[in-house]
Amino acid sequence: MTLLLVAVVAEAQERPIAFVGARIYTIAGAPVDDGVLVVQGGKILAVGPAARVTVPAGAETRDVRGRVLLPGLVDTHSHIGGPGAADQADPVQPECRVLDAINVRDAGFQKAQAGGLTTVNIMPGSGHLLSGQTIYVKLKDATSIEDVAIRNADGTIAGGMKMANGTNSQKEAPFPGTRGKSAAIIRTRFVAAQEYKRKLDAAKGDAEKMPERDLAKEALVEVLDGKRVVHHHTHRHDDVLTVLRLQREFGFRVVLHHVSEAWKVADEIAAAKAPCSIIVIDSPGGKHEAVDLDWKTGGVLEKAGVLVGFHTDDGITDSRLFLRSGALAVRAGMSPTAALYGLTMAGARMLDLQDRVGTLEPGKDADFILLSGEPFAVATLVQETWVEGVRVFDRSDAQDRLWAEGGYGASRPQAFTWCCYDDEGVEE
Image (cartoon, rainbow, N blue to C red):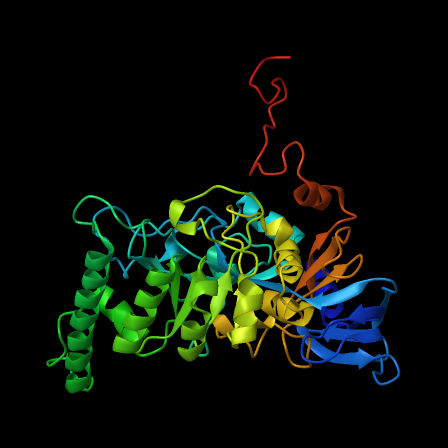
């Protein structure tokens, strides 16, 4: 009986599902009215106008007329799962992995699904010049981080390297006390990594000639080789230029994050071909170096020819409100087309995942969201979120709706199940 049940479930998962009648933003081309999206086995089989897409025989057909279909949203900078990496022992700790510090049962995962996020770059904090290795994940329901980790072609876990400058990393020694010292420390570590790389290259795999293994330098060599993208927290325009100066010197790939004053140095950023992942905050406050943050940043960078994406920095901004980041950028001058691209494909490119996610095209992962209306309309709600052909959020489900709308218990990882006590621990 158990074997029969497993077989039935497997067959159901392999049955094609066709979503018909929606307005579809493929991001790869113009919006499609009365569109059809067909998915099977976690991948997109077909997408396009109803007149051109044939629904496979035996497919489950879902009428989604009046709704909008959009690729799953990509958040290039999040902290869901309570991650931590480096500690206070050193300002540069590339050997630390956020992989080893994520709680996938954290409520932030469900809230992110409710916001339409399907792919996320989970980062350690920015209290260091280099705080460790990030991880790229799919927001599937899981019991361990390995279940959601995205893998590279060679089977290794995909991720970047988190770096920062400005005031976050300025502390008592051994941390730097000035911006100049911050850059000097980074230069010193990269020079040491270059020397380590030369020794590795000279050894040519000969165990007797290999240098003593150094996990920190190994990780920095991956950065130097371009295997890991540097995701760099930076705010002030002079800090942005310092990052670009270091990038030119050592040749690493970089995505600039936050870039509160990017609008002041947009041409320099464009000349460096450095992508920018921006955060759109709709309330005052925060650190002094971000005082000149402006909603117009997205539009200014777009006009300069910079690849622009968005991030939540959750919990700085709530994953459930991610679409609003694009809407506010549009309000301040960014084109709607670029803003939608920024929430989807731009983020995918920043994470080297453009061949899998970011657009709705045949062969790509079946990651998509169903919206109640146009993406940037004030009243639009995320109704469903699908990851690799599996629905992970459904607003019509009572528990999922709680994740989406807040209210009692929405952010709590667990609740009391004792028979005789309320949530304050008082006997009834």
